[in-house]
Length: 69
Image 1 (cartoon, rainbow, N blue to C red):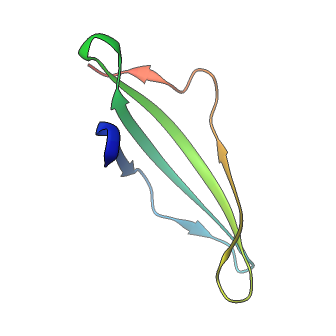
Image 2 (image 1 turned 90 degrees about the vertical axis):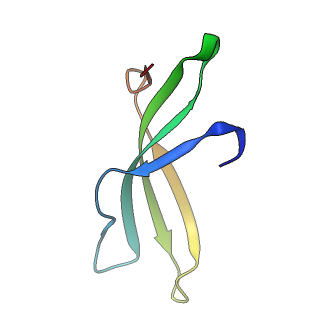
Image 3 (image 1 turned 135 degrees about the vertical axis):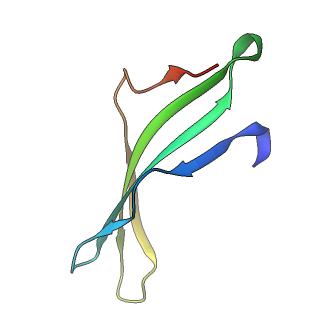
């Protein structure tokens, strides 16, 4: 990915029988001084009848980012 980002799914995508789905993933990015920063995220999306995105929200907490190396 551009900018040295790495993304990894950490659980299967979960969907409802309606128009919503959620996915949990991690993003690893270059940090200061050669470290790698990690943030854990959950995205929740909604879709229209043609399966196109109508909204997407990302959820994470202030203590989710961490340094991994």
